[in-house]
Image (cartoon, rainbow, N blue to C red; front, side, top):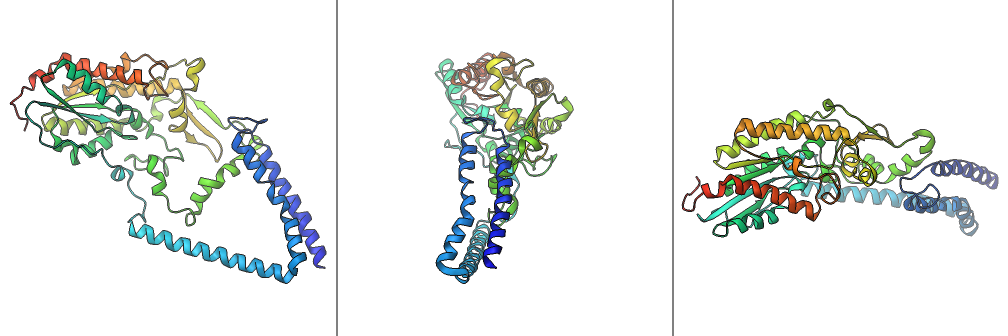
Length: 412
């Protein structure tokens, strides 16, 4: 009787698992290396062959210890897994309570500003520049300092780099009024746009929930800290480790094309109005402290017709600007759509410079849209960083801001 039951179990198991395994074969990877499968997919298919041997392993074990021994081993295994889960849960919750991370947090309050080594008090001969922006503003400041110092050897040019990965105008607003203002910069150079624009979207890898007009849906790189631990939050365990296998199962038949490019209208970029609001507030506080302001338009490689090698420049628009349609499909804006949106962002910046009476640098208009200057959609090569430093530096020199800030005049 037991042999018949085991035979029925074996046949049912092989039918079920063969159907399950065949589903993974109907999948086409994005970067195939063997037939239509990627390297990771091939490895997965090889590993998932192992469960085919489970009935043989069970049969061999039963022959050695008998059915009673097998069921006892199964009970002990279940108890062991349950204890492991309980202990992991206890450890997780104790750690989370101790570190005060139990609840979801506001990503804007958790993204720390850059710390400055310089003292708050500067001598009268120092001209201090504060740089505000995202990752695209992180790598040219030292080149800018060298450029300006060459033209003003008698003055000490000091640059405080307050830009950071993922930062938006809202981040700069918060960090300025809570920390950066203490250094009393003579000039604040501000370049924001692309990160503010990305807040219009809610990609699974970087955001939680739908669009929030305070942008609190967007966690960026801190999203892993916003989600509970793997053993506790099953949805996270599924999304982080199991979902690729679920996506791949009969994906060719269920979903067809995995991604599609869309010519979104300008109205799709719903975060533009908030960008304008946060930037106005930031200018208000900087002007209130008596510092000069220089707004910079943001260059990008986006253009209506991207040909040849330029088509691979879709890192951000595919990764950051995507909209999930279901478990396996996404859509993302075309280069022409993002060019239109970036033009609108830069127009807001230039119009605000006029209305607020501050300096404006049209870096977007001065940057060639080719791979000599960009490593991806927006980040610069070394040549691009040097060009950015020169564009801003030449504007600072031409404006005579430094000459007007004479030694001996202490800024209140």
